[in-house]
Length: 163
Image: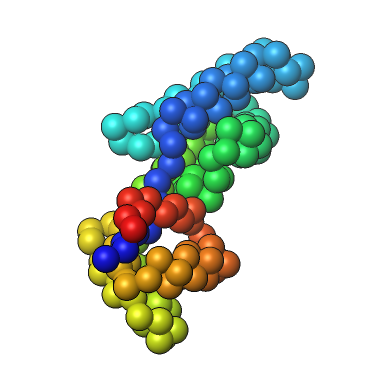
């Protein structure tokens, strides 16, 4: 019986490469001269920490990060920007959480959409991803096309496709 898994993950190695390029670009740009800025990736906590000495420089750093993510084929929608927090002595901090997995509410929306299509497939919610199984691979491909056309504010990947 053909099946596939619908997941939402970010490639942490590509994201690490993007962050290294951001560091390199910040060190060479004239408008960041004499401004101490630091950007780090916390792989265990799945978070990006940005600290800069000038509050006006935080938004350009985030924009550089987004452009580098696009360059390394990491969808910027996987970055969940939390509030910008001013710290002591003019230092500004921001933590960007990396979205991993499909939230439960979104899983329920996807399953509801699939069941409303009247296609002979069976969606099953497994923790933070969805397994879809059916009798024909063509039905699964139709579901894949439909889900790619929808906007759930996260990146969807289709893995473990079994024929």
